[in-house]
Length: 178
Image 1: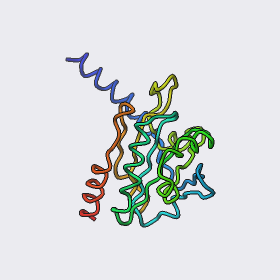
Image 2: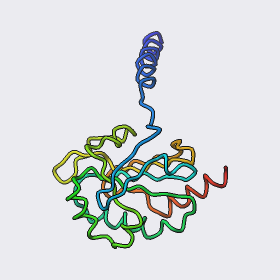
Image 3: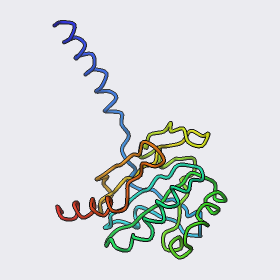
Image 4: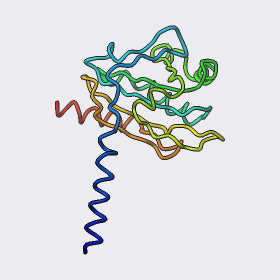
């Protein structure tokens, strides 16, 4: 019994410092479009829900379908902004998004998360082995109109992403309670 109690106390002592050092999400960030001349700033999206889509580095047809699905349905959600982030170079992102419908990309550009800086600031887990590279896991982070994180989904593989219908249901749930 004493060993079990001691083990629990030790575990609690180790856990408290780890939890207290967890970084807070940034209150402001600006990312540059890799597919145009604009940029996105959280400050410009105040009063709207913001979905940050962290897409892993590399070319993947599954991410193209996922992004296209979200882009083509985004206008059905009022007071809502989607931000697609890739850590690739501008040239790699332009080649990748060249496979998406041009009108959708003009309406919602793909932004560059240089060196995964924003993914790290939002504590998106790293270490996913994908196409011979180690990258951040695919993730969706939903911010409310005040910029507070209200939902997070981290996929376990490249085929594990948060579908648009689930995002729409989540936003409906959140707006119904506010």
